[in-house]
Image (cartoon, rainbow, N blue to C red; front, side, top):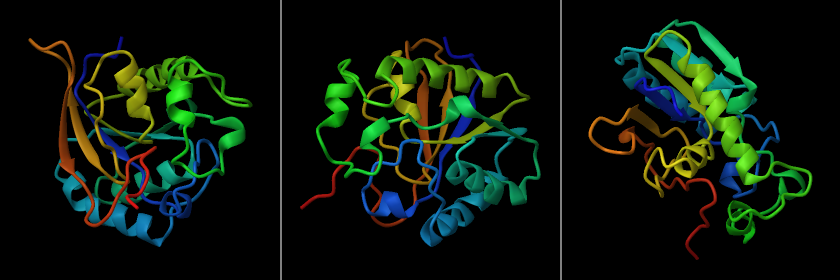
Length: 199
């Protein structure tokens, strides 16, 4: 189960691979200029939130996003490997709009990478590692992390998580699932992970 503490979640800013619609997985791609600007743009809003701790994935695109938004907060930062994006093995570096996701989620293999079930279990550990810190916590990580929450029925399916989108997540009260509130999304075109551009 996910620790029943409200928290904030920020997906990392854009990378060149995001822009080119290429599967990153755990390839350690840095933010591009747009990604840096996206993090700068959301930082003033984050500075108004009651955040006590920032926890990031150990991949550089998430760590750098966390560094930028922490300039106005100056809060303790913790980094966790379990918050990393899914390891997609041999398809990392391929176009992101292939048929891989449906087969993988249904239990198919990921040569050289994690199964979907393994990934979801790891992500849940990562969230709980973060939520063990002094809260409210801001988690800066990856769009695919939401797949783990969906897998366990913790949030509704189909939440779009474009680059540098900010959410507040509140534990269930009368409802069965966590409440996911969108607080910010960057301007302009922004595809969520696994989406294909409209032709």
